[in-house]
Length: 129
Image 1 (cartoon, rainbow, N blue to C red):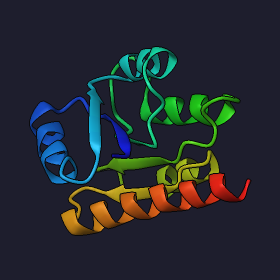
Image 2: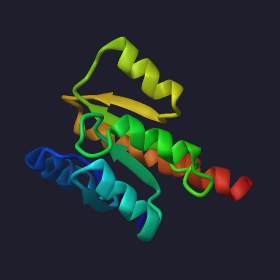
Image 3: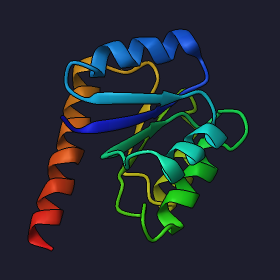
């Protein structure tokens, strides 16, 4: 089963997202950016990272930048799942390499479909490399 690292500090929302995606993915969650970074350095590498922007310790944008600058992690698609909808925020995330920007509230079936698509694209890239 493919894996997702979910980074979200709102525990009820995190539990909701896990409930939605866990039938399709193995989900690890962290409630802040520093915890996510520690997991990425020591745990199994996830197939996709889903993060909020406004998380404590290290913002989702800083986490995105770290992942995309890292040689080992740069191929992991990063999905931003955030309530921030300002155009400049979305544009900055996409400029830094986010694979998708999904605004809260979101459509659960669409989230699952987007994650499956990203995992499939990543697998295809690895097969053709």
